[in-house]
Image (cartoon, rainbow, N blue to C red):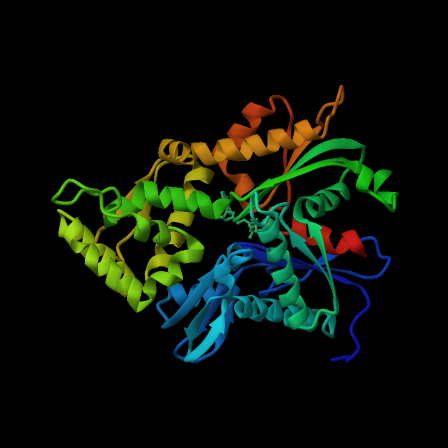
Length: 420
Ligand SMILES: Nc1ncnc2c1ncn2[C@@H]1O[C@H](COP(=O)(O)OP(=O)(O)OP(=O)(O)O)[C@@H](O)[C@H]1O
Ligand SMILES: [Mg+2]
């Protein structure tokens, strides 16, 4: 392995659900995605601290170990903790006290090492993607989120760290495939955030050194696929554990535990002894104690991420096939399952999708297009494939063609390229 860092720029798309990296050689005008797990160029943003072999596992390997029942701790949606005081809280893994900021570092360090394996040496320059808003309506926390990511990148050895908006990176990647000038609304709907930009793109414009005049507007909102999973879980699954269930006094079971259990980045806190004791105390709030027994079994078995994963897969199936599907909960109780129909999905997600589409509308309004009109809507990010979302977007922007892009690699490709 060569020791001096390779000349060029690394792009890291540290996503809520999946991460990807690209590499641009100096002056090359292109970038290539870096294989991360075998041939795969995107990998789940997941860390598993295996209590049996005491090793740390990443990506599909991490998720697979957890789902396979290996003893240990799974962490997902780390990006959702950026900008939150929870980032500095610590947790015990394999007898070691460790903060969530350090877990972000551990993940970025692994990405850097995987890049080094492909490039021959560890890169020192990186452009990191960031959503338009890490945190909505709170500039101080938003700035803190970026600072935490920068600190983590520097801590693992990146000497030169810069940031680029994720939707602009996606736009620059899309531009390389265009043959004529177009006015495009770029939609990046991921796991944690929805980001929009209206940009003027085209083969001639690509040659310009300064593209700031082509970016007509950017907007973003903290809504993504993990929020969809939460709503679907609360709507279809959590009632089986007691959400909205009434106790002997006619009062609903306090809902906090169900909120946390259906929220990817909060699940891990429910396994602390204090949280288990609080859940145990809910028993008197149930008129049907079988539902409480299910809840306690889920916590004892640390099944939270497994249920979230089942809900996510059901969401994807329901969207792809546009038919009813089943959420398998047989790990909680024999033959237990929840149903998910396209109409349920549309209803549970309606309010979130309306806010997301409103954010897209605001982006187009801010772009002040005058007499010009959009030539296309370019879709990237896994959640942009969601059928009810595409329907809502099409209803808002009638007649504008939707173009599906590289759902999981577009942002990373554009990142390295944007600063090469
Ligand atoms: N076919 C599909 N239909 C609907 N949703 C999907 C589909 N495939 C993946 N998803 C969802 O896409 C999300 C992940 O997308 P992506 O990898 O683009 O997000 P991310 O880049 O990690 O997140 P962010 O950019 O918000 O930080 C997950 O919530 C996943 O459930
Ligand atoms: Mg993304």
